[in-house]
Length: 303
Length: 251
Ligand SMILES: Cc1cc2nc3c(=O)[nH]c(=O)nc-3n(C[C@H](O)[C@H](O)[C@H](O)COP(=O)(O)OP(=O)(O)OC[C@H]3O[C@@H](n4cnc5c(N)ncnc54)[C@H](O)[C@@H]3O)c2cc1C
Ligand SMILES: Cc1cc2nc3c(=O)[nH]c(=O)nc-3n(C[C@H](O)[C@H](O)[C@H](O)COP(=O)(O)O)c2cc1C
Ligand code: FES
Image 1: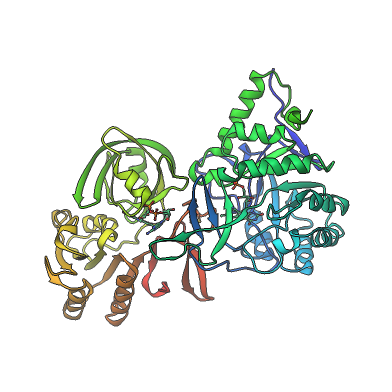
Image 2: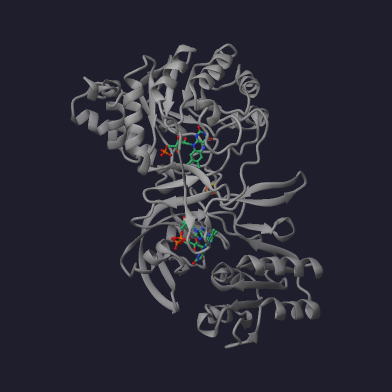
């Protein structure tokens, strides 16, 4: 019997539980030489702010053992260009489109989600966790009060399903997740990158121009898994797990910890086919193990 | 664009710590243009390494790699028969003019390899190559075999002009001018070439480097400042470059 790969998150049906992570997949057009977007459960588009942002000065990339640091700093063309130039290119792409909304103030978050009303965007991922911008971003995601304020303000102004993306750079991620749920978040995604740094011993300078950057890739997987486990045990809205997933086994583990779906980011940088291999591998596994549906994996390790 | 593991046909040491690889990849070679690059995945390393296309034939690609760190050292351990995982061809490559135009190519060190296909395109390219010392000089015979005239400069004077390559370059431009100029090499060299191109009113292109993750435009990691009508903005070496018009490059 064919496995039902569909998952439902906040009323949105994904054809499979694999979504590409924000900032690692541009605006969806960079990997279409390799496979069509319609293979994916969904696509989280590059973090977008109301006003255009230049991003941080280079170098923006550093390699780490089993991971990498980035300090891109939310470079994006702004909400208006996102809606008028990027979204039209995605019409009919056959996958769930998620906008990653970031801001430096409550008003700029609200302004952006208002721009997204009436567009083809299926879901909003509220980014309160970017470690690479000076104002806003992670500052909102670092406390329960900050997170609650943004979610409350945005919730009142959008009819789209709202997923809130959390930062791992906090002492108590569970209480922040609960605060978001209490303000009306329809889903929680985690984790964004972990703050880190590297020094070039030849030049005796930090590698990144911004000194610090966000760590991603397989190195962060156990941390992400632990946080997804904690959050999924504490909230009743769906949780989307990400951080270091590179193969189908990781995705299955993440779902067993309580994730309804997963996102894949850094893995595409070294294997462009990673998201597709994960979908295929998971499907074969589910079939082998006699599961009727991918959604049966969610939280199986907690029972 | 393709991503595949291809067989290496051979590796040759062409200078200390500098290796030439022939790769059996006819499908990727059929797509490749001068100035593009391939993104190489190496066992034990998360990020791919960007390496320029040095020669394009029906059977595959040639790349030339200098050991600069752990990744390129790992690459130097690959040999004939090993598989090499490539993503490419990436980037836009060089804009070329008609083959009879008077082209000047300026290469510094490991910036030299991407210029070789241009020497094959232009009938009589004038090539200026700078290296630290005579034993570091690479590809000079390849350029000559392609019909180019090579002027060599070494910093220690062990071969050719004693000093920087931009010195004989300036003499040439002052005397003969040029229709189009291409340069790839260390930043100080690019800066000097940029100034000379402006001084002698030559259309010039510079090939730039940046630390990369995706190589395809998805991560926005490889930013470089570029002068546009709207002022200085960040463009991306992998997708908008690696080649940029010299007057737009902010060095
Ligand atoms: C478009 C392009 C074309 C290139 N073509 C060639 C070529 O034909 N031959 C050649 O030998 N080298 C070339 N380089 C430089 C080559 O990519 C670096 O020397 C190599 O990535 C260094 O890796 P490593 O692991 O040895 O060094 P490490 O310093 O250990 O590398 C650490 C990280 O920094 C990155 N990095 C370090 N130096 C550079 C650099 N100069 N440019 C970009 N990333 C860097 C690495 O990719 C890696 O992610 C090119 C670079 C670019 C951007
Ligand atoms: C280069 C880069 C850019 C990123 N940009 C964003 C972004 O704009 N918005 C966001 O919410 N997360 C961004 N992230 C974080 C990823 O979406 C993801 O949370 C993180 O990388 C962990 O997943 P991974 O290990 O699978 O990459 C970025 C990550 C990287 C590596
Ligand atoms: S390396 Fe990712 S955008 Fe250039």
